[in-house]
Image (cartoon, rainbow, N blue to C red; front, top):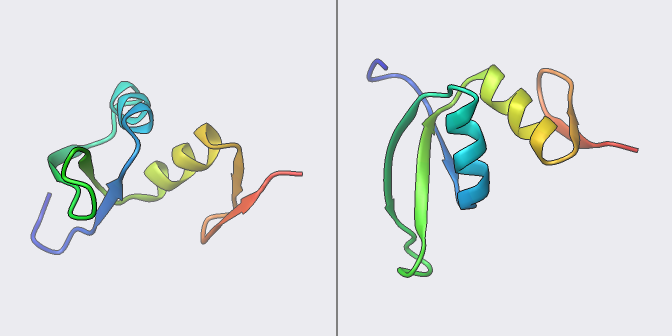
Length: 70
């Protein structure tokens, strides 16, 4: 990862686990500022990550944004 890479924050642990299984670049975790009992998981933001997030959550990904599946 270079200094200009963007970070995608994942709040749900089950999504974190699935994304790691799929081989996405997990960077680090931190406490959730709104609820310190929970963790936030930081991934390198890529189109592949967005595509897999859409698939896991039941959305369609058109390359620019996620939309709900019908």
